[in-house]
Amino acid sequence: MNRKSIARVSRWLHIYLSMISFVIVLFFSVTGLTLNHADFFQADPITKEAKGNFDSAWTNQSDTNRIRKLEMVEVFRITHGVRGSLADYRIDDNEISFSFKAPSYEATAFVDRATGEYNLSQTSQGAMAFFNDLHKGRDTGKAWLWVIDISAILMTIISLTGLVLLLFIKRKRWIGLLLLLIGLLVVVGIYWWS
Image (tube, rainbow, N blue to C red; front, top):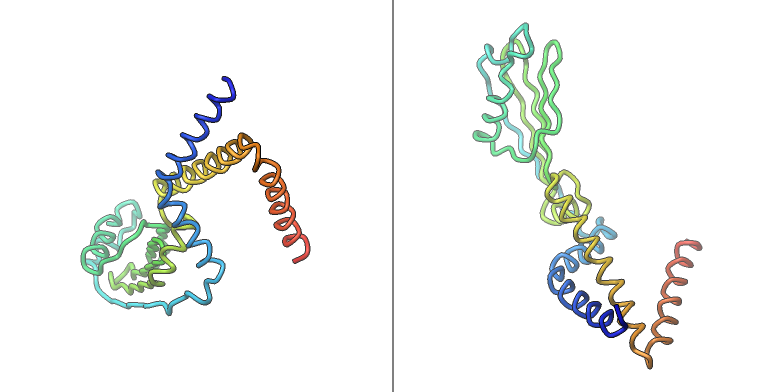
């Protein structure tokens, strides 16, 4: 591949990958700031409590494989609006516990095995915590983790193609490389001295 082809391909990749990934790069830039200053953007959590009762035939089984886990989860979702994925499920001698998690959200339920009575607590941290959790990939699921990985790959390609394009601009090449070096030294220096 000759120099003109390299420049043409780099320019094409740089422009179009920048446009394709513009929204996600902007999202990760803004949420990087909100994460770095989380105490400024943090909202008070909102907690809702609920109580209820399951049929004890669902909960009080000597064979724990016969406990009606899926039916109980559906009751929590339909009756109380529980969301997120089931992160933890435990059966003890006297109690069954459920834990659901999603970005900026957590729900925990404790069910008395003998009576079927349950206590449910749902906590939401607000919109900014939701976006910050998306940035971190916390409790988001595998599909969002792919979005994060693809975004990182796109940002890497955009950065490298920008550097390649700089190398083709003779009048700006040395000042650009000098600024690149200064930027690198500033970042390393801040980390080293802080």
